Length: 281
Image (cartoon, rainbow, N blue to C red; front, side):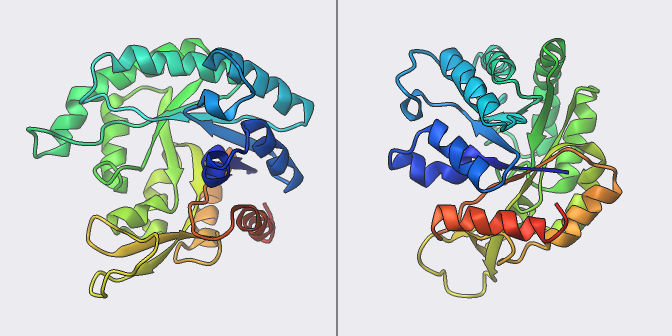
C-alpha cells in the first residue's frame, strides 16, 4: 500500500496563502509518496490562466520532486445539477493532464421530492455509468466515496456500485467517514474493501449525542452524535484494524491521508505519516 496525502489536508494553509506547489514540497519533505488534488483552484497556483495549465504544471513539478499524483477528487451532484455528466467528463480530462489514475466524484447531496435513496440511485446510475465509460477511454478509473450523509453507509454505496454495474466504477473507501452515518468503521470497511479503487484515512473524536453539543469545530453525525476531526491515531477510528481489512482483501493501492482537525496542520500530517509508518506502511 502506498501512502499519500490529500491537498484537502492543507486547506487551512492554502487559504492563508500557501500554493499547491508549496504543499507538494511539504508533502514530499514529510515522507509522503503522493498527493491527490481536489477541485483545482487557480488562486492556489502561480498565476496560471486555466485549470488545464495549472494541472500540467503541477504534474511537472511533482515529477521533478518524485511525488506521484494518484487521484483527482471533485464534487458532483448528478441528481440536482444540469449538465453534470459533461462537467464531470471535463474533470476526467483534468485528471488525465495531472497524470492521475483515479477520478473520484460525488453522487448527489439531496433528494428533493424523493424519500427513498434507492430511487435516487436508479435515476443517476446511467449518468455515472456514462462518466465511467468515458474515463475508461482516458485510462482512468472512476469511483465514489462514502460521503455526504445520504450515501455514506456501506450498504448504500455497495448498492449504488452494483446498480451502476460498470467494471471501471468502484469505491473510494474513506475509513473515517462511516462514523458520520454512525456505522462501525471496521464493519463498513469489511463491506467496502472488495470494491476499493482508492482509500482515505482520517480520524475523528466522538462524543455521544446524549452529551451537550461541544464547542469548537464539532459537527453532528446523521444520528446526532458529535464528531470532530483529529490527528490520525488520536481518535475513535480503528485505523490499524481497517487497514488490515483492506490488506486482507488484496487492496494494494493508495491510502491517502485526509486531515480536518483543529490541530496545527503540518505537525498533524507529520504525526500521521509516522503513525502509518508504525503500521508498516
